[in-house]
Length: 191
Image 1 (tube, one colour):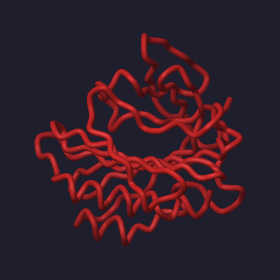
Image 2 (image 1 turned 45 degrees about the vertical axis):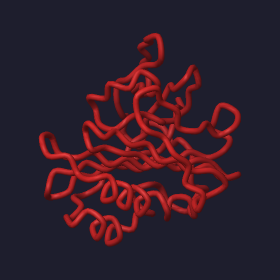
Image 3 (image 1 turned 135 degrees about the vertical axis):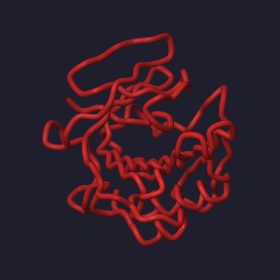
């Protein structure tokens, strides 16, 4: 089963517009559903046409430089996303830094998207365009939690990175944004 993820930061996301569904199961809410990630060998979402999945394309040194912490080992999988009544599956890799920051990188090929690559949209978070990445790119910022995401669309597909601050100690927007951009940039080239 192939499903893409365009979910929100972290597993306890309150964003009703974006949610994830574990491969093989679906739960529905008014805006979407959320339940997790399947191991990478269960489904191969898309993505990279042999150029490498999210765990392989990451530039760990760039992300660590932006965050000031060491990335742990990446955990790969496939995740399903339902957002604004659109659903897709993405290849995903998740890391946790030694400082407790959680980061995610998701990739999906164009043929795995439900039509055109969807922009980030939220009634809760601040969204702005990033003109220097891909054909279209957006930055999403949750100032309450210190969490952010970058989504980039190209003719080849979509890449999305998310950075979640440790509980109780939010990171500033510029640090989160720099880490999210460092995380997503090599994925865009590998789509």
